[in-house]
Image (cartoon, rainbow, N blue to C red; front, side, top):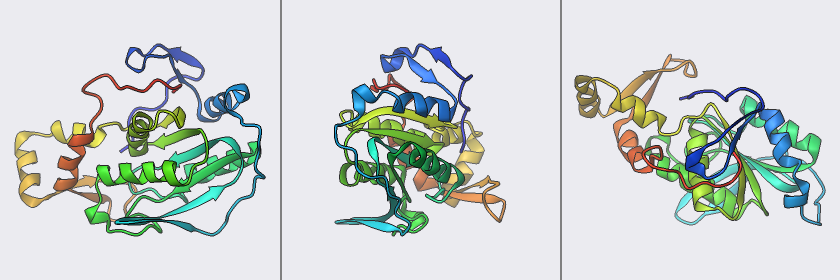
Length: 241
């Protein structure tokens, strides 16, 4: 579900919708720039940086328990929001952990409901449920201001989190942005194909991440995702991007 990649390294692009200039940088350079603003974000207390190797679980009443790993460190903290079906042990998640550890910053990575070590049935998951997962991580685990790093579908959820928690989310880093991507792809299909998917209740898409070479997406997942689309109007996000 990867969308368009990041723009050229170091280029500044005015973004009218977000009310502030959006900075598009290479990942390490961009995140380093955001973390370097210590005068704005670093509190007087700095916890010791110590990785937690074992998987922990966030218990939530009436919702699936979420598996996560938390690296203690200074503020601002970093939260990685993975792509669809990706988990907290993916290449990007581990690379960011190494990066945060080298700078002594707090870092949280987690698995969505129904994915990886988290509880839940993947077939019952929706964009809305995964949005709640992200907000639970921010509300119940993260301490102080946070920089969100979203990959693919995680970039979509990252924007929702920034809208819902503007006081806590102070910056965003997007990787292979896929905002509204699934719904956009579906709407571009021929009418007869969309009707066939509706009748079957499943959309089979080619995927290099599956052993079968395809990935099945429930039609109900697509229809639910329509309620969370953002690109049809200005997005009320004002933090650095």
